[in-house]
Image (cartoon, rainbow, N blue to C red; front, side, top):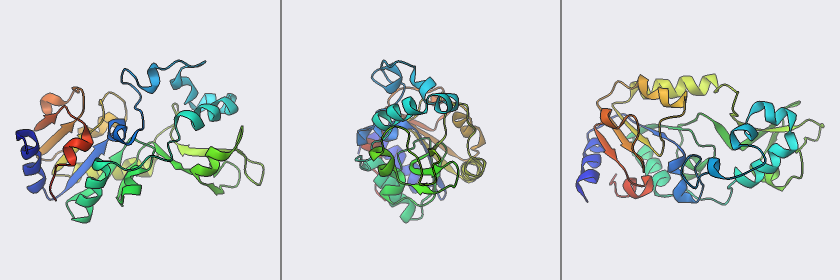
Length: 240
């Protein structure tokens, strides 16, 4: 165990209320690409910029094109939880980790066994008819053609937060409450440049802020510990 991992182990061993805040970098080791890295989604070429395609107005005006992109680039239903997801679930079962706050929509934290998960941007695994609210699975969306429609004729929408849409109020309130109560906050796999999610760190009043990210973040100087490594490789070494 190297010095940085040993320091992280000490933080975890000494904390009673740990909260984890994660971004796209948590899932890259599961084979899900992130957005803003050199080879990320936003650097690929499409007829429209991904930020435009993943907006509420584009969903309303170009629904078929939205779903063509969504099926190809947003649904990774064969992905499995990696060492980070599994370790966080283990920490929760041990009573050390109180909540996971995630910007990801892949559902891998829940699949790994985490129970108290705040999905700020929703989940691809929840899809609803806009008319009757009937539920549809992600697999049903993946297998559908064109614009997926309900038995009642309504258009099915993924329960994910698109650009121009607000975060879910209850989810946001729960995430802020968890972060404010934490004595240790582990932030991982996020550049901390996307708002309003990045602003959630402002609610932390605890003792230890730990950052785990491949690249430096604007908050590194504020952290008790900053590790510029892969999230799964770091958390996988922690002993519960």
